[in-house]
Length: 143
Image (cartoon, rainbow, N blue to C red; front, side, top):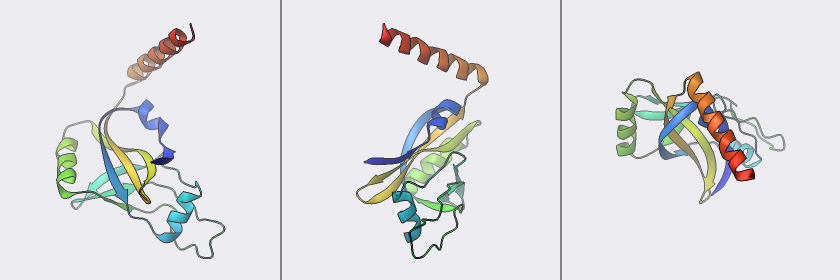
């Protein structure tokens, strides 16, 4: 598995509880762009729409060397998962304060996958506590 993009901001903004793997439905020119490293999902989120999972806010710019660029950089992309997993996610998201956050985009067996995590938004004091714990671990490791 080769990680193409990791959403490091998600670890800071959310307490990540459960993780799932989903395939991403991409067009040919989008695949070329992602392989070239042109992807950003800092503002991306996943949602359930009519029983399907969709990824919103994934930005894939047009690949400059392609002879055809026929994709919209920011469009809704369908996520591919088994029905039972989608149902499990749906039940989890009914709890207040939980959301579905994309954390990684990677290549597995020639196919692009997205790692989704069910997360609970951190409050400001939680972020400060996590940062101070990280600093303490860093100091211990250096000593």
